[in-house]
Length: 178
Image (cartoon, rainbow, N blue to C red; front, top):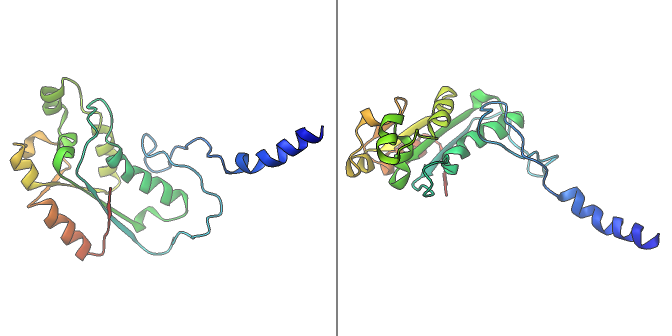
């Protein structure tokens, strides 16, 4: 009996700090699952705008799956709204370049390249519906021969990823680079 109580007392902290199941977000329900963090010591600012630009320049080599770096924008929206930040206070942009450019292809172009529909299209559509700017590096598009007609219609082309990143940071967006 004493050993059972001792074991429970030693195991209790591990149980308390174990991560629970991820939860579906309230903004983009199909993507961007998060974990609840109860009573964080570093409090989330729920009053001011949170402006972020994600620098996404790589894919993960599996054309059948959503790019997790693009999915991070959905996680960002979901976790912050769930933490009490009004959606209108969240300003989010994705600057896409390099290997990640193919993830912005429309289904027709993606099927030509990979033989399947683009699994990122529902995510891109959901992000665009929530006001997320999705910007493709024009240099990458030119190098990879990707015309505007081959990408999702909400994608905006920039002169370059560098240009878009600098301009957004000049507008007080904070850079998150993976």
